[in-house]
Image 1 (tube, rainbow, N blue to C red):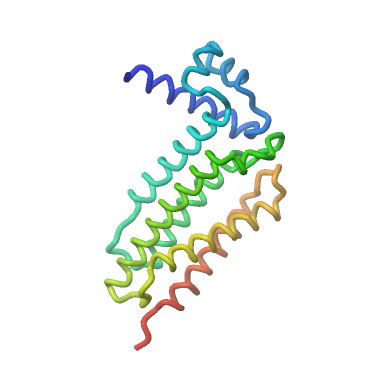
Image 2: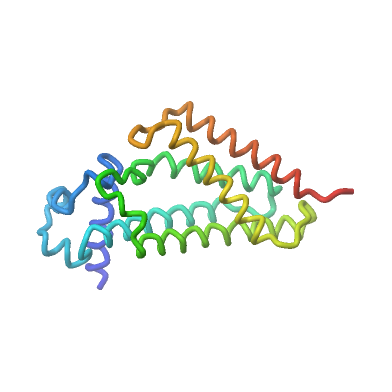
Length: 203
């Protein structure tokens, strides 16, 4: 079982490297098998098709992301600083795994029910994390709002919207320049400042 799990993780590692370099749409299962020097039957044993491999990659990336933001999370810090730290982690992953967004050649990928379900589940996990941050801030008297889950949803979708704008301005097949990423980060932090001020208790 341990050997099987290790082989599965090695395949995901190989897929991530190729997806990052070439994009998902331009990568085939044959490419990954050749990169790893494994037989196609062995590859298909762990992942019956490319869709299941993509799901495995998504799970790995988000698991690493959640592990890092939770490691960086210090509830004793002011809420704005916590959110700034989280933005830095989000954008590090955004930059590192940007090419995972390139789905040219597989236009129906994001309409696939399995992948949509996985992405929805991961978004809910991130929303719950932000809800915890806002709940802690409320308990410390930093903000005032009864529905922290709703606040978390609005905040997360605002961050995602700014990410989308970065992609649209850059062009979906181009890697964003550092200047564009810095601009996106600054906008997200400015948004955070305004957002927290709007939730702050009125004396």
